[in-house]
Each structure stands twice: as structure tokens, then as C-alpha cells.
Amino acid sequence: MKEDSQAVKNYIDRHHVAHRDFLLRLRSMIKTYLPNRKA
Image 1 (cartoon, helix red, strand yellow):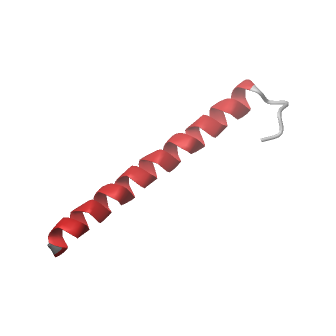
Image 2 (image 1 turned 45 degrees about the vertical axis):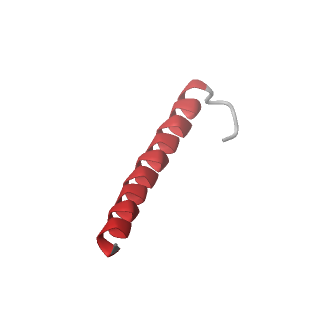
């Protein structure tokens, strides 16, 4: 049971990092295309 919860935790951590990386890339793209906008 403990191994299962650890696997779920690892999956969530990996997914969260990927999601945050996507948001950072999206924000930088917006700054590139809209340089005069306040972020």
C-alpha cells in the first residue's frame, strides 16, 4: 500500500513540474509576442 501511494506522489510531482514548465514557456511566449503588455 505504501509503495502505491509513493508511486502516485511521484507521478503528481512529475506532472506538476511539467505543468509549471509549460506555464513558464507560455508566459515567455506571450512576452515575446506582446512586448508592450504588462505581464
